Image 1 (cartoon, rainbow, N blue to C red):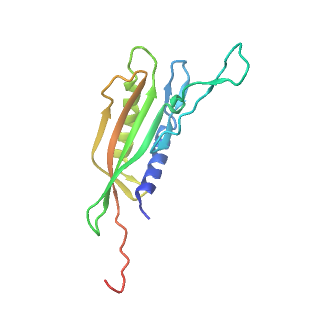
Image 2 (image 1 turned 30 degrees about the horizontal axis):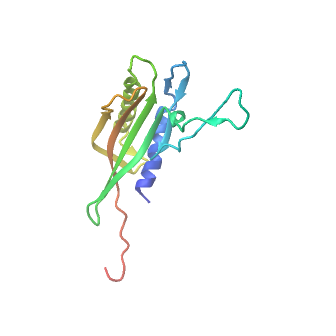
Image 3 (image 1 turned 90 degrees about the horizontal axis):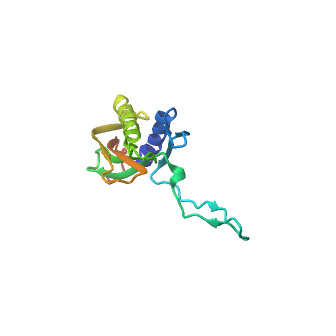
Length: 172
């Protein structure tokens, strides 16, 4: 059965595979692999902060999602079913996020590289799981506001999902 959820799961697998050997370097020189999540980032977590000189439980830092970076979110957007026997069009967007604390403020290059890799992968092999086909246009967008040290970008796509076969009843 073809569904938008099955498409999303397959796209998560494809993105993980495409980025398995790609890393982003953080400011400490550590190479980080991209996390790939369906729809949303996991919940923010608070980490204990040592409180020197005081007894009692450690204080907690404000909740943060920094541990999820770098990441790609694979998000279902909307699905359009135009007719009883028509294939549906499923909009899926990919949100790419990195943290780059370098004061040269050029983290968009890493975001662009990931967007280019994913776009080229989808355009080279336009059929996913032998059933979902990407359509045009494919749109890439960068953040418009300065969000340093976090850099974001996105890819907007539309995929064809075949219509289910109608079951005939005695009334058809």
